[in-house]
Length: 154
Image (cartoon, rainbow, N blue to C red; front, side, top):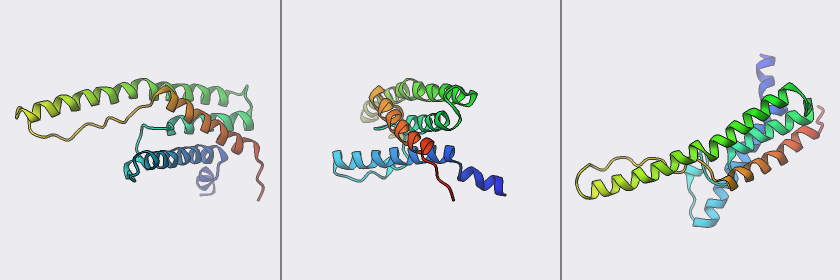
C-alpha cells in the first residue's frame, strides 16, 4: 500500500499533474476572458491555449532532467515521449479537428436540404496550433523547474 500511495506523492507524477491542471485552468480563464462566458467543456476538454498535453509531458521531462540527470536514460525516454506528444498535438490531432470542421459544414448543408437528419456534431477543438504547443511546453518547463529543483523534506 505504501508503494501505491507513493505514486501520488512522486514529484515526477505531481509535476505532470500540476502542469496539466494549470494549463486546463488557463484554458478556462482565457476562454472566459475572450468570450465573457464560462465554458465548462474547457475544464477537461482537449485543444486550445495552452496545450495541456505539452505542458504535462514537458514538466515530466524537465523534472526528470533536474532530478535524474539530463544525460540519463529516463530523460531520453521522457524526451522522446514529449516529442511524440507535441508532434501529435500539433499534427495528427489538429488535422482531425480540421477534418471534423469540414464534415460538420457538410452535415449542416445536407441536413438543411433535408438529405440527412440532424446528427450530433463532431468535436472540432481537438488539436493545437504550434503556438499553443509552444506555450504548453514553456509552461511545462517552468513547472518542471519548480518540481525538479526545489527540495522538500518532511
